[in-house]
Length: 145
Image (tube, rainbow, N blue to C red; front, side, top):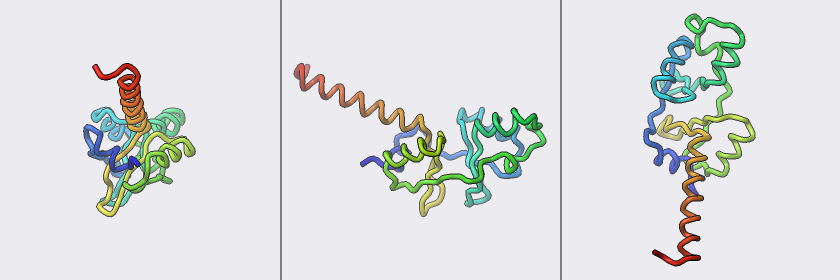
């Protein structure tokens, strides 16, 4: 069965972009824009303190009229972050994302923070698997060309 580690290996970049809890929302948003990502792991050293997502920007900053340049990430991040181990199977990961209505999931093991999985990563994996199945069935039905 495919695991979180397998999905991370398929990504173009497994680098995890982190931000310090005392960084400003403006700096965090700039970092997200720069790297074209929707979430940052909030960390102090090797300790995960939370996750900061596009939803946090919208719901806790913009909609509340906060000043992004004066608001610290720690004040608006999601501190109850769910982290999965690299051995976790993708069916379980998909269930976690759906059950908790989240889009990003950090992956951490004995080696520390290994990467971040998104619902897009799972969708791409599923689409690729479906494409391969269709090709196989087409070859089976019509013969190899």
